[in-house]
Image (cartoon, rainbow, N blue to C red; front, side):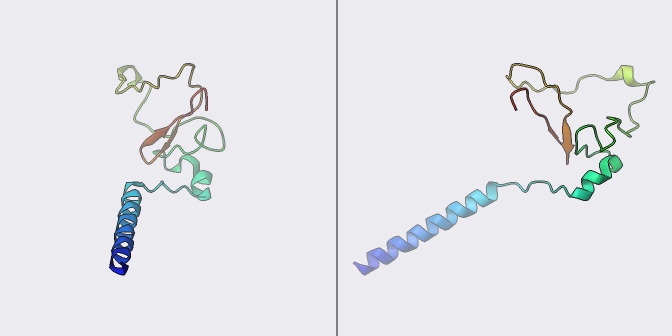
Length: 106
């Protein structure tokens, strides 16, 4: 009888460990943003971390790829359907290549 209990406990421990490892393996580390990153604003223009870009609220990007001379050549590269009614009227945030937006019901 003791052997059955020991075997059951061992099996339970193995299953619990496997489940814990599986959950841990699926979690993606969240990008780290420090208070200094927020104060730096758009010093790294690829990271639009706060609404309006920085604390001056100018909503101006220092990137130079788009100019008055070439803006007419811009075309849509992708679209995302949210199936949410209403308008998205907030500045999106960009962190490490991921765009974050808030919807009308958020």
